[in-house]
Length: 260
Image (cartoon, rainbow, N blue to C red):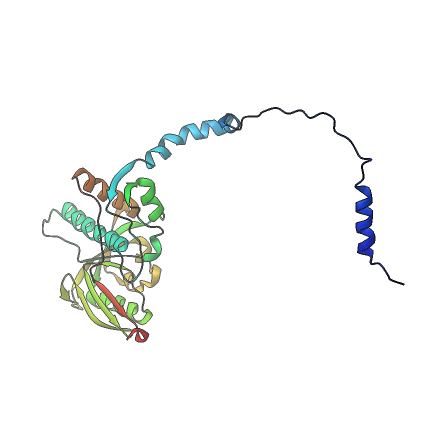
């Protein structure tokens, strides 16, 4: 005799329950409900908070400049990372001249980290919100007095790891985990010279393996956030009728053994 599984009886019971003896619907009524902003209208405390912060949020979306095209960030150098480091170098030079009254004062090199660049710069209009999205961390610009031997140590650490950070004022060639060429401000590194190095406070404490920066003789805290520095530059360029442009220029080359 053929046996039926428990599943058969379960399905049979379900089918039997789906007969015509159930409830009959003889009338159907409906009404139209508009799903518009009425249902999203803020009330009470929420409305107060939104009203307080809306002007600030709206202001962040106003264009502060324009770029020639989208700029991405990637190692060992990229248009966006070069732009950030170059702006920092110029900012530090301007800061030193204004703070010391010495028109000849200048920063020798600048460095920020790729990890702190979190998005691409859009092509076309640039807003303050875009800059905040790219540089979301509260990193401030600092200027170090760093001996050449520690600048060399920094680059040698880059070579061992085959990973560099965003640089300006530097020509660096790394091949097979060795520094093949290292120029700062156009000249070979002098181990005893004190270099003016612009960077961010996160790297000053050794972040992103920048342990050499912890050996600086002294440093100046400019009290300027990196993103504010970038925004200020964009606004200045816009006021001068210029669009933001940047590109790679061969300042950093990393040749790994497997690439030879």
